[in-house]
Length: 327
Image (tube, rainbow, N blue to C red; front, top):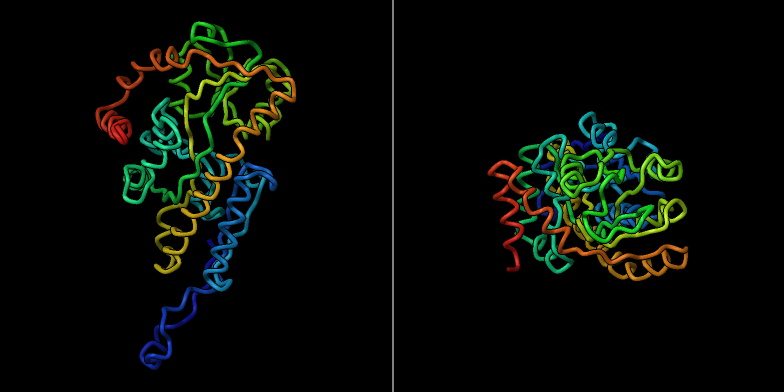
């Protein structure tokens, strides 16, 4: 974080009612990172965030976007937050599970039921905000906003209708404990791998399948490597703006408020854009020769029910709190 603050303390006593509002810190530049290319929706969410923050601060706070993993993969850029070489990362909450396992519940299977449940969870003052506060306290990362990505689905070399069909399937998963545990329990052979390597690995037969929201299937051109998309809906993931908590709280309070307000608004905008685009994603995949398979999702849910028992009591309580919302 590169910050240059104006000297205002000495002037405070000399400026009575002329200054109606507190002055913002000046020349604050924040470096943001995403693995998405510049034309991707989530890059545009970052661009929108930068634009609105600049407008709200009269250009005194600038967010510089970097795209396409140019500053590193998801894990590398999150690590860079702690060193201050990156200030903001656009990524899923579950990417923080190596810092505290609670964050892994961001990708716990079938925990977020659908878009309505998602909105209830992340309403102001809802369980989602409490979840973010707990992650900050336990991991040292500040999370702002929740952008619904649409369900994660499988891209596969072969047709999958039930968990029994997963036997022997080499399944790429993000390097997160929750994903590994999920697909291991379902009967596949989970293979952790950075997202930027997945396309080549599928082309070369190193893996048989991968899973991601449909937007990412198209962005990464999975359809050129494998012929099936299995609509498992096993996770309803969400992006967020990730900050190092100590660095964020070192910013002036008025800047923090703007970053929070505009971060939430940008992610809400991203959610609406995804919801409008989802039907088109499926049609585009079909036009590219993909066979869409509707599996037995109840069988997937049933196979995963024992997963909860593998978590400690405090995390089981969080799972139950999420599940109870809207019931």
